[in-house]
Length: 59
Image 1: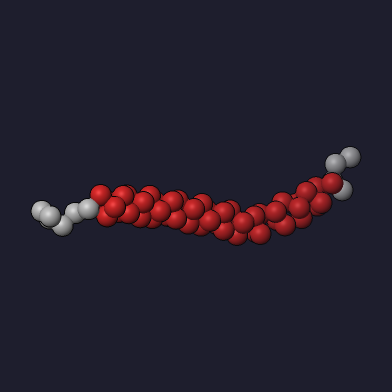
Image 2 (image 1 turned 30 degrees about the vertical axis):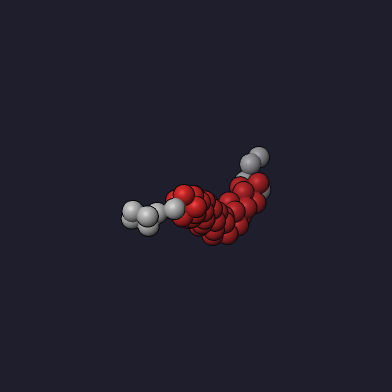
């Protein structure tokens, strides 16, 4: 065989390539969700406190 390439090796390489892209994509989504949840931990309680403080002042 010239270059010792077999069709099954090419197919496995293509499959491995798409598997790496698939795993990178979900890793990025997981990272984004963790940042959003970390931000919500600070924003939601602050919003709730400000909202409760402004309820008594409206009359």
